[in-house]
Length: 484
Ligand SMILES: Cc1ncc(COP(=O)(O)O)c(C=O)c1O
View 1: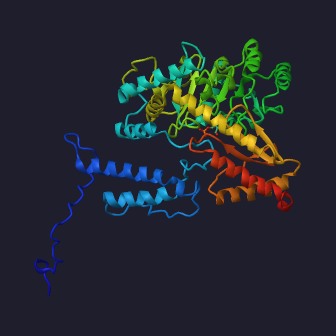
View 2 (view 1 turned 90 degrees about the vertical axis):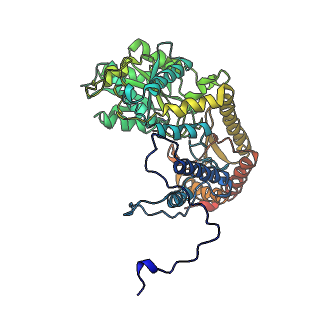
View 3 (view 1 turned 180 degrees about the vertical axis):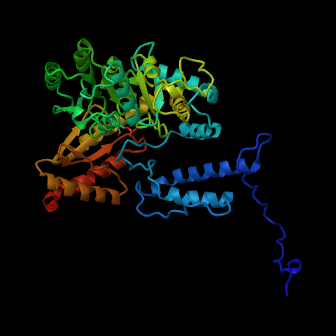
C-alpha cells in the first residue's frame, strides 16, 4: 500500500521554471501585484499578436471553436483564461485586415484601446458625480467641445450613449417633450426614405404607431426631396396632425448621402419643428475645415447624433447625442436621484439620458482624439474619401450602377439586371471576394441587392482596391450566368 507520505514523485528538475505568480481576483489596494501585472501584460501581448497576424486570417473567420461557457467548480488560472480568450479571438471578426471593407467598423484606434482598459480598471460610473468625479466633468467638457466644433453654439453640449440607435431615440424623446407632445399619439416624424432603421425602433419604444414615421422620397443623389417634404408638412398642417420632428441624415447607411440640412432647417424653423440630424456616419466630417463642405448645415440642428466609433476608430461603443440646448436633457429625463448626493453640476449623468449606470466611454473618445490630433483626424477622413473616389474610378468601366454620396461609402449593383439577378450576383460575388480575403456587405437598397464598400479602413491600399475591381470585372463578365 502506498500511503500519502510515500507517494512516488517524479524527480525534481535541476532548475525548476519559476512558477507564474497567481492571478488575484481583485486588485491589491496596498501594493503592486506581480501576478496581476503579468496577466495584464500577457493579455496585451496576446492582443498585439492577434492584430499583428490579422492579414494572415480572413476578415470573416468561418469556423471557430467556443470554449466552455459555464464556470467550472474551481476558478481557472491565468494561463487557462488566456487560452480560452484565444479561442474566442480566433473566431472574431477581424477589422484590422486590409480587406475588411464591409461595414462601419474600422480598426480600433490604439489609444482608445488603452483607454478602454483603464476605463474598465477605474470602474467608475457616469450615473453620478461621486461615482465618477473627473470622468463626469470630462464628458461634459468633451461633449461641449464637440457640439461647439460642429457649429451648435457656445451653450451646446450633450451626453454619451451606447450607440447611435440610443442617441436617436433620446433625441426624439427630447423633441417630443420640447413640442409638448408627450401625450399625443398622433404626432409624426418625417425622415428620408433612406434613414436608418433605428428611427422606427425609437418610435416603437415611444409608443407611437409605425405609421407615425413618414419616409420622404430621395432624389438621384440619395438626398431627401425637399419639395416632397414641403408637401408632406403642409398636408400634416392641413389635417391638423402635429409634427414631433424632422430628421435629416448626414451619411445614409447604404451610400453615405447627406440630406440638404440647410433647406430642411429653413422649413422647420418657421413652423417651430425640431430638426434632428442623424450624423452617426457623417457628422465627424464637420470637425475639419477641409472636410466640412461634405456635411453642410450640421450646426442648424436642434439635436445631432455623432458616432465616432464608425470612422475614427474609437472603440465601441462611442456615440454622442449633442444638443443646442443641453439642459433639455435633464428637463426630459430628470427624475431626481434620491439615493445620491446632489449633483455638483446642473444634473447627474444618469438624469441626462435613458441610461442609468454607464461606463466612461468618454475616456477612449477623448484619448483617441488627442492621439490623432486635428491633423490625424483630417488625414483619416480625407483618406477614406480618397479611397472611395479611387474605387469609384476603378469601377467606372464596369456595367455597374454605383450609388454614393460625398463620404466614404459606395454601393453598386449590376445595371439593367432585375432583382433576382442582382441578388444572385451579389451573393456569389461577395463569396468570390471573401475567397480573396476581401469583405464587402450586401445591403438590400431600393428593392435590389447591392454590394457595398465602406472605405474607412486606413490599411486598405491600392492593392486591395485593384483586387476588388478585378473580382468585380470578372463577375460582371459572366453576368448572364447569375440567373437564379
Ligand atoms: C445613419 C445611421 N444612424 C444610426 C445608426 C445606428 O447606430 P448604432 O449601430 O451605433 O446603434 C446607424 C448604424 O449603422 C446608421 O448608419
